[in-house]
Image 1 (cartoon, rainbow, N blue to C red):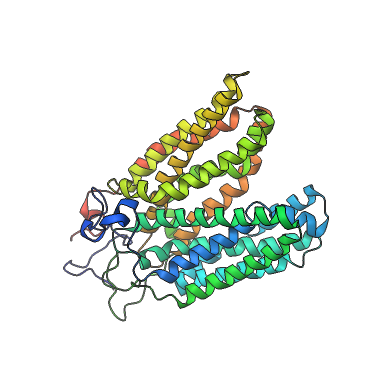
Image 2: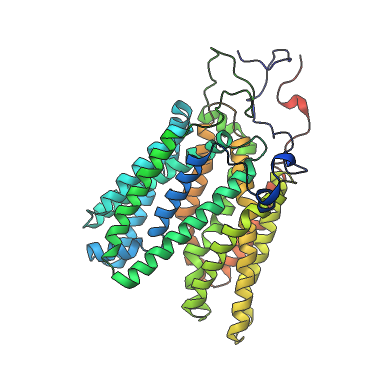
Length: 454
């Protein structure tokens, strides 16, 4: 039986990763984060070169097909657009159980092995895209791709504590978000330019290149030697005595963990909000407001640039507060952004420049909401899970992304077609309701909840 040093044995709840000293109230270890890196909000990157490179390569490859997957499939298969969309949706739905499998693998093999394997699965899926000619083949290839993506994100969050200096977890999550936005934006720019210059045949090259980037990322993860390991004494969480068996998680323990399920529910509201740019924005701006396709593209650029550039610095400042407060603030800002998105509906006949200004302001608030909430949600998804055998908790957190991503296109477009203001009202209401849920995630100040004295 594993017992904490200096404490008498007794009944206790599953050990949690406590917030590292210095995490809240001030940026951790200010003496080590001076100069330009400190002002930019970057974490300590020493020893994490391969880890950072893997994220950069992966996001760059993803960006190559970020907006052109359907264009490629239309060119390669000559199938009707509706049939391609249905095939992609079916593949996505069939991949929904992947987080549960990822949770079991995470408990058994650890995050590094699962992340590397997930990249290999994605590489196989995109290689399969080169051979698709029918709808069922599209569904099969996309099932493999989405299964790999779900496996990846189930385990990837647990790599951050292995890469970072204790106390910089939220900075790392913010840095990864910024890095991935930069990579996706760069990849999308390259593919858009190449498509304009060389036509649709260039997309075959991008499919192959994307598969290659996943192979490269898998190699980087496999060969990366983390500075810390789950059993290292300087990592968050209780020490593990040599020879002591690891506690195994269970689905029943997850279902009894009401606080973690509350985090999952709050993340569903966040996921639905994050579906606005890929699902709702373009059709709302062009078809509902008749504001022109250029504005929809410009708003996407604003979002990508704001998240890529501002996330590290804002996240550094948010570490002065507990993650639950950052999440609550993010949801409040998000509710304000949705109100601004809906504002042009009440101002029919407004000049185009005024509509553009309102929507840009709304997108900036939306981006700020993402910057505040995303790193803190990811931080809590790791910190609130049991210190050992937490794969099932991570599976539940990732399932909120999978289900939210699958439901958003149906729900948001149906509401928009019924009444344009309804999706914005729904998203604003969910954001407001998520604020007290976020506050309920605050850690208890009672030290005896974890291990009561006899």
